[in-house]
Amino acid sequence: MRLGWQELVVILIILVVIFGGTRLAGLGKAVGKTVREFKEEVTPDVPAGTAVPQAAAPQASAPQAVTQAPAPAVAATVTPEAVGSGVGTGAVAPVTPPPSA
Image 1 (tube, rainbow, N blue to C red):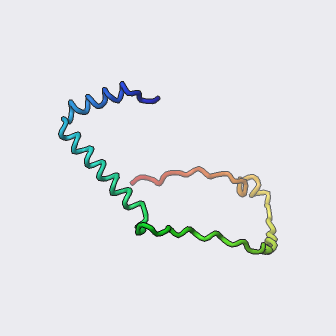
Image 2 (image 1 turned 60 degrees about the horizontal axis):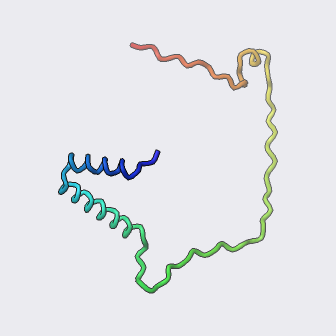
Image 3 (image 1 turned 120 degrees about the vertical axis):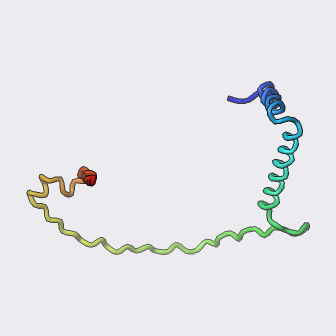
C-alpha cells in the first residue's frame, strides 16, 4: 500500500492543525540537523584532494591439506531395562513444578 500525493497532503494538513506551523518548522530544522550530523559521522575524515585507501585484496595461497584424526570408537551397552525406559531414545521426561510452600 503506497501513499499518494492526496494522502500526504491530508496528513500534512492534520499535522499543521495539531502542532502549528512554527512547531513543524522547528521539527523540520531539527530533523535536517540530525541527518546532516549523521552523514558527517558516517563519512571518513579525509582532506580534500587525497584518495581514500582501498583495502588490499587477499593474496591467493597454495591450498593446504586438511587432516582429520579418526573419531574414537565408543562402545555402547544396551540393557533390556534401558530399552523399555526410553533411555537413549531422545525422549524428554516431563518436568514437574516444585511443591509450593
